[in-house]
Image (cartoon, rainbow, N blue to C red; front, side):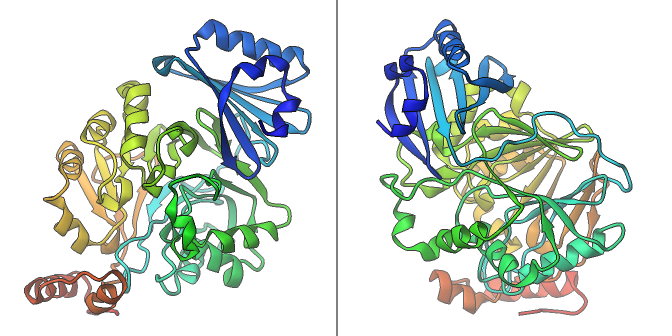
Length: 429
């Protein structure tokens, strides 16, 4: 057992199945637990000198965060699994667990940002302009989205009420290169004079079995990420765990699932390392599953009901590729669906994946990232989206060279003509 558990009271020796959570954090699980057992372990922690920092209940699931002895302890109980988990985390900075008083100088707006799809048909970036004019960013773009680190900064300046850029938080769903790649370049080339107050993420430990993406770091850029982040002075690094509820300006976030909830399931599908985040702002609920896949979907649909999962706006998991289930989207039942992908891949995959059809058929509107950045003023009503100019178009041949698949000439011709109709300036590749 890892030495970090020596800081916990002795009764935690009843836990087993040690799991390395990454960043020096470790988790133990207790099978066959009931609420009484959970409460006894919670009391043991407090008796041993730990202080309850925050508590959250989501339906029947109970989540507590404690501080003491130079570590954070996250203890939570899931009754449908008859399981309790305790995570000892020496890495994380504390999240803000109470609402913040925030000056109101502008409208809160949520953006699906059009990453540059000229050479790549994936990538994802969402931006929230808070009511004080500062920004919360979700993921970034693929390393092949050339120049998007500058485009993100230019966009922030354009929609800032005074042209100044303060990033109150930057969140990463998981460590795939199309989600963190351009953040790395942002730190390298475009962060001078930009204040980043906090980073939020929960990346897996490279030692986790089955996670073959670590064998070739070009798939994740995690080594670059860790090195660059280590040089950030004055930026909080918050490792998120399930059930935590945190506040950033006038935004409220709830962590619904992390890779820690998948254990002891296999993480061979790296997309199951995605953290699932629920954003609430100005009365609008937005679901952000990242690239969540089958096992994550099972966790969400078994632990929660529509009471928790029902949202107004939802990002389609894994860009609309094989991701979460039909049941998940039926429970989310969002009126507005967002696809962080290209029109080409959307059209190609819509007939292949029933989950896409379920989500779109339940929705009143659907927006595809390659067709232009879209803004949603919060609170949002269907039909009020602000659609920005379409800026990018796929280079079929570059993508073939990168991924190895090809489009028919007829498909290329049709989609090129459609793009030229949407964008008066024609193709930009």
